Image (tube, rainbow, N blue to C red):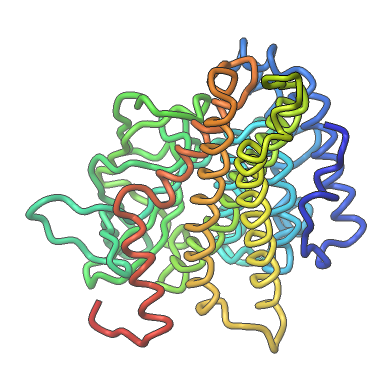
Amino acid sequence: MHKPLDGLFLSTREHIDEEEQRIVNTVRQWADREILAKRLTYLEHYEQEFAGKRGMLLMEIGLQRLALSEENGGFGWNSKASAPCLAAVLMEIGRADAATAYMSALQFTTILASGADGTSPIDTLISRFYSTDKPVNPALILPGPGSQDEQTPLFFGRSINARLVHEGDSAILFGKNMRPAGCGALADHFCVVCADSAGKPWIAFVPADAQGIQRGNILQETGLNACANADITFQHVRLPREATLEGKETVEGLYLWLNLFLGATSVGAAMNFFEIVYDWANTRTIKGGSLMKENPLCASVLADVAEEIAIARFLTDDLARLIAMTASPNGPELQNVYTFAQIVGYRVQQGAMRAVNRGLELMGSAGYAREWHAEKHWRDIKTIQSYLCGVGAEVPVKMDTARFFFDCREI
């Protein structure tokens, strides 16, 4: 397509300065040159191409250090004020390949949720995970459905399936057959939501080479094909106490960043889907030789695609702006923004999915052909949606919303 996406999908990105915009533009050039211009080759040799292109993005361009503090050799995008530019970067990566953006989204979430300030022991620990000469694979283990007839501590209605026991200067982690978000089969480290003996939530940062970690068989998933996943068991995994963070506010922060970053990833994939549908609609004719897009019924479907993506992008940009405002003394409290992150994350994934579904309905067989790349966007967004707000997962979000707006106390 010949129209610039930024001119079509208007944005509220006044928080991005010139230096940050240069990095966003660099990532956009990488996406256009290295993947979108070579789409068929990329798909035909996907796993090999994925590793090479992701390595270029993370190591040569340097995005693996983007969210690390300057004190630890990073770009310094490690604060709430960096939310708009990090989201913008993930949208550009998502245009090229949602799986690559997904892995970066998990990395940014891990770093920002740790409260990285450049000086704390936890920041030094997290920085060591990413201060390597090869791409790092992160994985998150979040609260989720519980096991039948088994009582579990809850984080706002979500079962915490990992347990943490403090023993002197150490912390010992337990958990059985837990499903990560991310590259569980190949993860280099885990960010784990767990609970202590009193049921209080914690986050533990676990190197994958720690003793006592067991990985299950590789799972068959709908999308994110290069992100091989597997169930994880922690059997008496010993960690230094400084590798853990206490409190529900920490877990709220984790979900806040995850909703923003996975939303940006799916919006980026949906925007490339728009580019595909735009080019396709410009060449398809119907009876009489007129363009299909000039038919009112077809134009209505195309409008649905554009509307859903425009609203999803606007919501994501506004959430990023809202998070950035919490850095101001007069800004909203981060704890309150958590609820809006849940609402926006749920709506954005719904909107991106509906946009792709409507476009595929119109494209028919062309939409499901690998040559158009459209079906991969559907599979990737669907998989991201399932991790963030899959079957039943929208119920805790509804309860979060009811608690915030209506002061519910017993749900």
